[in-house]
Length: 128
Image (tube, rainbow, N blue to C red; front, side):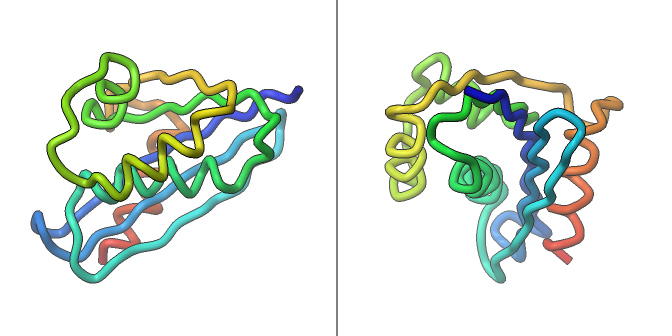
């Protein structure tokens, strides 16, 4: 089982508004960038989409560490915070995480974490 680190971030110009997401997948010394956006969305949806797209891109047998500056995502997945919105994305995320070995790590945004900074740059660019 290999260890894959996934750094994720979402961005939105207005909330709602045009949004973007970014994910950096790191395995050893290799990195892969994933990114995308939507014309009308929210920041929380972009944060969640980044995690979903990252998980979809790795083998289900991989051990995964998700690093995100989103307390919305991290607290919901680790502390059972109430899910009041975005039920479609929570269902996708639950399915992806269900049978995998996934750990979660909150990182302070815009604080020098290289993976978070790269994911933020991708998300911000996609948001416009």
